[in-house]
Image (cartoon, rainbow, N blue to C red; front, side, top):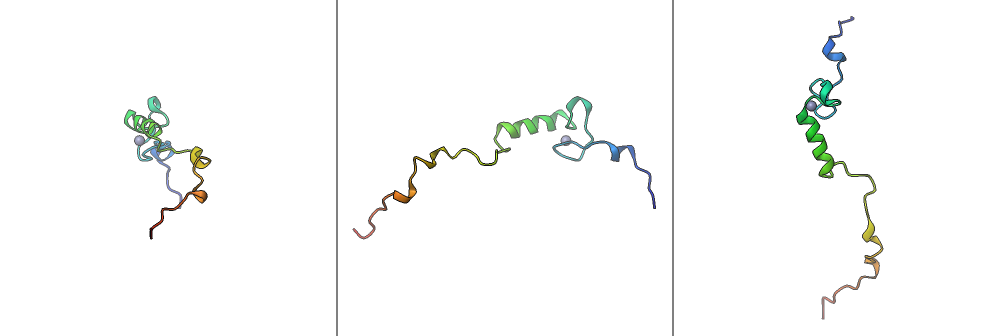
Length: 72
Ligand SMILES: [Zn+2]
């Protein structure tokens, strides 16, 4: 039950769309479009770093925040 492996199957797929074979000029992407799209994602912050900035934590003592009197 061995089937021949097509050259296309051995070709690495685009890192973004994972559909088209990687083009040498745009490695690891298949085209400039995918390369630009991936870069755009970075710039837009879609690749958020785990444990992002929580600088406001110290300045926002929610525990001591006074609640407004509703029955006053
Ligand atoms: Zn692609």
